[in-house]
Each structure stands twice: as C-alpha cells, then as structure tokens.
Image (cartoon, rainbow, N blue to C red; front, side):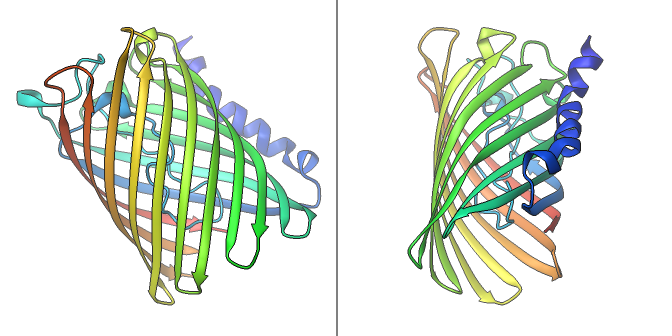
Length: 289
C-alpha cells in the first residue's frame, strides 16, 4: 500500500501527458524540467511543500517552484532553540502544459507537474508530489498581465500522517514596465487534507517579486513572501513565515538556465518560544521551453 501511494502522482501525470493532445487541441505547448540542490541551516517541518515561495523563477510554465522545508514532527516543533538542525536536499521538478487563445490577449491553459524531494537527514520528509492546474491568462493593456488558476495536488511522504490531497487557487499580476524590468504579485490559497489532522491546514500566501535584466542573459531577482497555515489539530494552531529572497538566473544556452537563490526566512507560531530563522541556499539547472 505504501508503494502504491508513493507512485500515484507519477501515474496521474503520466495519464495527463498521454491524454494531453485530446484535452487541449491545437495548443501552444510549454514545459520545464529542473534539478536543484538546496542547503538549509535550520529546517522547519510544518512549512514543507509550500507552493509559490520561490515565485520569482522566470520559466514560462509553473516555475513558481514548489520548495520543501523540512524537520519537525508536530506543530509545537518549528525548529528553534537547541534542536536547531541543518540539512541538504535534492529537488527534481518537471511540468508540461499548453495554452490556447480564446480571444485577443486572452488564453486558457492547463498544466501538469511532478516533483520529487529527498533529504539527507530528515528522510521522513522525502516526498513525491503531482499536480494539475488550469486557468486563464489575460493581457490588460500593454503593461499588465493577469493570471487565475485552480490547482490540485497529491502529496506522498515517507513519514507517517503527512500523505495528503490539496486544492486551491492562485491569482497573479505581472507588470512589465520595460524590456529590462518587471514586477509580479501572487496570492495563493491551499486547503490541504492529510491522513493526520496534525498536518491538515488552510494556507494563504502572498508574494511580491521584482526582476531586473542588467544583461540579455542575466536576470536579478528580489522577492518577499508571507505564508500562514492554520492547522486543524490542535485547534487554533497557526504557523507563519516571512521570507526575503535574492536570486540570479543566467541563460547558459538557448532554453538552458542556471538558477541560484538565497532565502532568509523567519517563522513563528501562536505557541510561545517557537520562533526560528532559516537561511536557505539553492542552485539549480533548468531547461525551459
């Protein structure tokens, strides 16, 4: 049963890829694939699987980058104090999707994603996540692009009680002021239903990103993310995180990118003595079409 649940995301994405031509005929295809190494100096378990935290990535697909942040086995343990620990992770991510124009500057899209994350120490947080997203892109004038998506995900972990299904929605706006400067704002809602109520929650996330191109092959990123998760058990338990990020995207060759990012995260909860900080460094190689 454990093996079956672990491969379900891959099976769902495989079926999606097989059926895609029938789902979106005459669509413009896009896909991304990335391998990423991550180091954290103080992992925080209840923030694992946060969608949109790394929303500054510049790929055309779903490269909001679903990033894992590990450690801890209960809401009371957010990684602070003498239990402070570090870990390294390997993250593999891929998505495939397409869009079709339905009106001037307006298109519908559908995309599927698959992700695997493995930890060196906190192996109970090793995960396989599969997702589907569909929505609409709208160009509002020459500067503003709006996007709305409905999302669904299946998450499978090695640790007990964390396996879950989730659904939610994402609303984003992107303003391209010049060919070398843009801003992006993202709101994400997620309802996560896990095997154990300890890991079931309602999540809200708000991000603001800025991108600047000092050279044609280089993009500098600066971002801020606020994440709040209200857990079902124990009643009234809430975890929040504020993350400030700086990153660089370098185009090695056509459609090949080197992504590097530093995140400084401060998390807390409504339980006293649970404040924690986490410094996260990541380097990835991405192919984006």
